[in-house]
Amino acid sequence: MPTLPASLPRSTTPTPPTIPTPPTIPTATAPGEAFALLATPLGHMRFRASSRGLTHALFVDESPVITTGRPGDAQHTPACEAAAAHVRGAAEQVAAYFAGTRREFTLALAPMGTPFQHTVWDALLTIPYGTTCSYGELARRLGDPGASRAVGLANARNPLAILVPCHRVLNAAGGVHGYAGGVWRKSFLLELEQGRAGLFAV
Image (cartoon, rainbow, N blue to C red; front, side):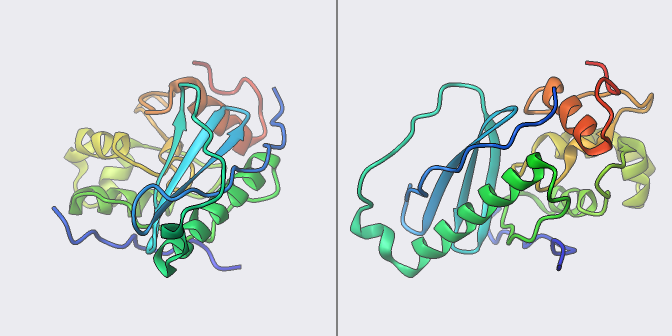
C-alpha cells in the first residue's frame, strides 16, 4: 500500500477508542470545494478539500452544523466531485485509524502555507506511527538546530490534524505540549498509537 507523498504540494499563493460513526454526505462550500464531518472519540473532525486534495482536517469544539438535503447543481462539476472524493476518503481513513485498523494514510494533501511551514510539515510525515521526537530534534533534521521555536510555530499552524502528525512532536523534556486541538487530544492520540493508556499525562 502506498504511503503519503514525501513532499506536500506547494501553494502558488503567498478509554479505548470506539469506532466512529460514518461521515455526513460531503457538501460543497464553494466552487471546487467540499467538506465532511466525522464523529470520533475526540469529538467531530471537519475535513475540507479542493479538487487537488485535502486542505483542512481539524477538530471542531463547538456543536457542528450538519448540512443535509439534495446537493445543488454546483456540486456536480468535476472539481466538486473530486473534492467530495477527497473528503470522503479522509473521513473513511481517519475512522479506520481510530478503530485501530489503519496506521498510514493514502490521501492527496493540498494545505496552504509558507515554504518554511511546508518544509516542517514534510518532515512531520517522516515520523512513524507510534514514535515521537522533540521540536529540537525536528529542527536538527531540517539542518537548523536553533529553529526549534520556529518549528513549534509551524507545527501549531498545521491544518491537517492526524494526517500530518504534529501530535508526535514533544517538548525537550518529553512532555506533551502545544497542540491546536487541545493537549488532552494530543495525549489520547499518542496513547492510541503506542497502545498504552495513561502514558502521557496532561
